Image (cartoon, rainbow, N blue to C red; front, side, top):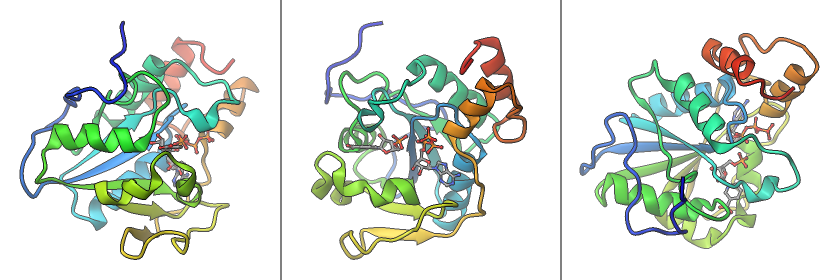
Length: 215
Ligand SMILES: Nc1ncnc2c1ncn2[C@@H]1O[C@H](COP(=O)(O)OP(=O)(O)OP(=O)(O)O)[C@@H](O)[C@H]1O
Ligand SMILES: O=C(O)c1ccc[n+]([C@@H]2O[C@H](COP(=O)([O-])O)[C@@H](O)[C@H]2O)c1
């Protein structure tokens, strides 16, 4: 399938309610999701509750440029695993904006595309784990990110959650239940023949087996 150029005029609509509307509060959970795991889902659910979000849209990366040194599973597999993992939650949706855009995935583009989808009246909250938040100033056009969304940093075992490097009022910090789960550990487990049951949703375990991922 042909990809759209970077920064297209209109973004692909997301599944789920996805409707534009003034005052809607939309969480955005960006990630490579290789595979999506319960750490991602708990973080999104906790922030949704804390910030009274109407919807959380999971956005799998197309080309995660800061992971260029690692092998990344094809985007369609990561997208489908994210759909499977979020399908049972009526407030969760998945967007293709990043995987349908050509070139490296930049959050500044994600936020502009989702602004087109949800409309100028929606309030956007971008959710990041403590590790991602610590690196945010290395992201493209970092100085503009905080004009486009409010950032929510969540705790993650093994990382220090801090916003001291970021503009005042741009970020909220939230404690979420500690789940020492990472996608890289899930991949290593599958490669080593160890189970990933209960680290990732059941449907994702079955999808990994069906598609022979991470062997
Ligand atoms: N266990 C977790 N608790 C809280 N946040 C998490 C957790 N795992 C990932 N995140 C956050 O979710 C987002 C997407 O993460 P990503 O898809 O890269 O998963 P990952 O587990 O960090 O992957 P990998 O191990 O391959 O680097 C990032 O903001 C990351 O900080
Ligand atoms: O905008 C950037 O330059 C940028 C650089 C690295 C990561 N991000 C975003 O951070 C989120 C988590 O990314 P990752 O690589 O940790 O899965 C995801 O939405 C990425 O698009 C964004």
